[in-house]
Each structure stands twice: as structure tokens, then as C-alpha cells.
Image (tube, rainbow, N blue to C red; front, side, top):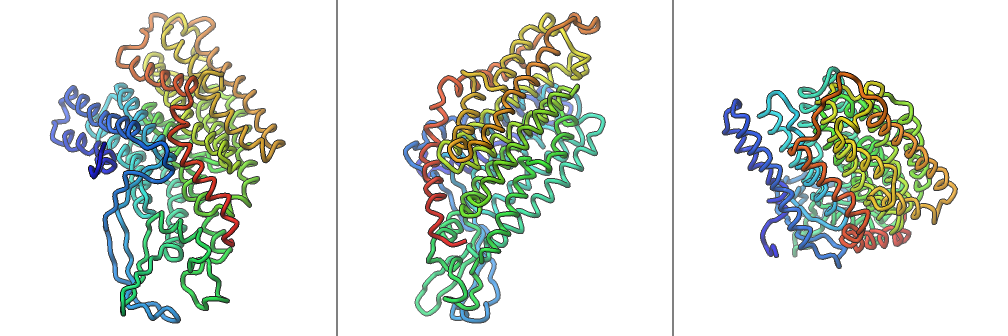
Length: 543
């Protein structure tokens, strides 16, 4: 369908049209600003739908690739045995691509992004600045999932931090500045660990030898496919030890590979987040405006799981195998810790925050399985939780606007006052606890099934979290919807049309995946099989 058309670039930067249009509209033109903002947020979803339809589901390789030279820097010549090369060049490319692992995340980003944009109707101040930061955040998120160059991935990853910092710090609640600062500090530490690991990868595995007659050159590159090929090729210089190639500047010793793998686990573990790197996330969930938390919980947390699979497991499968049990244990800790603390919270936003910790633990279980079923479960959980958490915080925004509180002991009886919203909350709760027929069930089932094949005891312990999820979800839903209604909450208006659109849309996708999971499994299956083949064949390369 697209041929040579740069669909990925257009999709990634389509919100930029909205940003440019917003910049030209006076800040006091509220209606015009909202219309342009919603149109700007709609463009990625339209393009993502077309991309999803055109995607070749029988291929496990990257598709629609776009690659251009971006930065080229001449380096000093290396000394020693490799000085026969006439030139050393650092080449950083603008490379985009999409496969079955990134396609669902791109669609999720576009969908939740538009739903969160509609939910931004609750924003009451500085609309123009808010809309511009929001669309810039959307560009960063889309770029993260389509980048096929480590440097480009890092740039897009960092782009997401700046808008989030301002969206939390300016439009959040009472302790918004502290939440924004904590978000930036923790994610900054994660970014530093990621950058260090990426630099190590570029100077060891990121080399391309150009055998030009009489003047062979070496190019250092951040291209993901080049680095992945060199790491998995036993004949590549990165895997040839000093006994065969003395003083090789490319050799990555087992210790160096372990260092890079651990740095990546820390970087993406903070983003996920893995216990104990979770405290910053609690503040964001409670202090950021609900429309921003829809993005944060629905998409940004998934960047951690995506990065852990793409850059941790696939580039270092041997290390991932060795740490599989530890990852599974960390996943169980996330599940149980999040579930137990969610049960005792009196603030609904904290219930959802700890629930996110618990549900991201299920992603870790699927990743730790290192199998087709487990990895499919991890991807399903990323998409499912993205939809469910976005729906939950959409409801949080609507409830807070009407009641000015989300404390469970100050709510009650809303089923009588706002029956439509109460019904949507019940559906979201049932999906969160994994009711069959909804997306939460299929994702949890696949993740636990995949891990049960290799670690049955850990799986059984982790399944306790499913029971606890039913308890804390039903406790919160019952506290909000049933019981006597407070006198000052009587006469509340139910969801407006602008609110029902994202609510019904998110419920529809939750039902679609739960009833017809093939809509998600078909585009990801071949890529998952390719990933599993890479993991299983990793024993051929020492490390």
C-alpha cells in the first residue's frame, strides 16, 4: 500500500502539524485550540490503523524500514593490530522500522494518546502550552517504538521526559513539583545507565568493516540490526577473544556483556518499574492530572517492558537465560507487593498505582519464561494493561471533576448518581482482575502458562496475586459505586458525550481482545517466533 512512502516518519511526526498550528493560534481562542489539538492527536491513530491493516503478518522481520545517514564524525585511528584500516568513522543514522513487537505498541500509543487528548477537557488553565507539550510527548513515544538505531531510540526516549516533567509540574495537584522532580531524577538515572550501555554496545558490537580496495575503513554505528547481528554471530570480532585476536578493540568479554545487560535491566527496570525502583511512579499517579496519567500508566510504563525485551533479552539472550529465575522472582515480588498494598489504600489513585506495579509484574513473568507463549503473554499484558489503566484514570478524572475527591471513604453510592460511569468502572474492574471474555484474562493466562512450563512453583506463588487482585479491585469498586451517597454528591451529572466517546472506545478494545485475541496474536506471532529462535540459538555464542 505505502510503497516508498515514508509512512513511519509521517506517523511519528504527524503530531508536529498540530504543534505548528497551535503555535499560530492566540492563546485566548480556547475552542480553536481544542479543535486543532484533537485533530493533531487524531492523525497518529488514523495512520496507525492503516499501518495495522497493511502490515504483513507472515513476516517476523522489520518492515517499512527507513534509513538515512544523520551524523558522521571522523575518529582518530586506532593503534595496534587494527591500524591497517585507513579510516574510522562514527555514523549515527536515522533508522525507523516496525515489527510484530513494536506494531501493537504503536497502535496502543496512538489510541490511548487520542483518548487522553479527549480526556484533557478537564484541563482548566494554560491550554495552549498543555496541548503543545502533550503532542510533543506523543512524538517521543511513537519514535521510541519505531527507532531501529540506539542513538535515535535514546533521543526519542529523552524527548518523552521533558514534556512529562512540565505536564506534571504545571498541571498537577498540590505536590506536583515534588512529583515532577522525583520523576525526572529517577528517569534521569535510568537514562544515564541506558546511555552508558548503548555506548559500550556501539564501541564493541557496533562496527561495520568496508573492504574498499587499498583503503578498508571501519564505521562505528548505533544501528540495532548491525549490533544484534554482531552479538549473535560467533565469527564476529565482538565474540573473538584475545587468544585469537590480541589487543582487539572490539572484543566484548563475558564480564563486559554482563555489565551492559545489568545496566539495561536497571535502566528499563526503573521505567517499568521493578521493585524497589517504584516510588517515583506512585507520586506521578497521585499528583499528575488524570489525562497525563492515562499516558503515563498506559504507555510510558510499557516502554520499560518493551526496552527490556528488545534491548535486554534479544541482545543478551545468554545473560537473560541466566537471570530468568531472578526476573521471575522480581515479577512475583511486584505482583504480591503491589496487590497487598493496593488492598489497604484509601485513595483510589493509589489503588490504581499499586495495581499497575502488580500488573507489570505479570509482564516480567512472561519475559522470564523466554518462550513463545510467555512472550506473547508479556505483549498481551502490555497492551491490555495499557487499555485498562487508561480507562481507569479516565474515570478518575471524571469522578474528581464532579466530587473533588477520589478517596474511597468520601465516595459511595455513585451507581445511583452516575449509573453509566459506575457501569464502565465495573467493566474496567472486571478486566483488571482478569475476568474471562476481557483482555485482562487472556494476557494473564498466557503469561502464567508460559512461566508454568519452566518454573511451576514460582508461577503458583505469583497466581496468589490474581486472588488478591479480585479482592482489592472489588473493594474499590464497591466503595465507590454502592452504599449510601453523600448529601453533597446528590444531583451529580453522568458522563457527558465528550467523556463517553473514550470510555466506550476503550471498553470496545478491551472486549475485542478478550473475545477475539487473534486480532493481536496474528501480527505478533511471527516476530515472537523469530525472537524465540534467537534466544534458543544463543548458546552458540559464548558469553
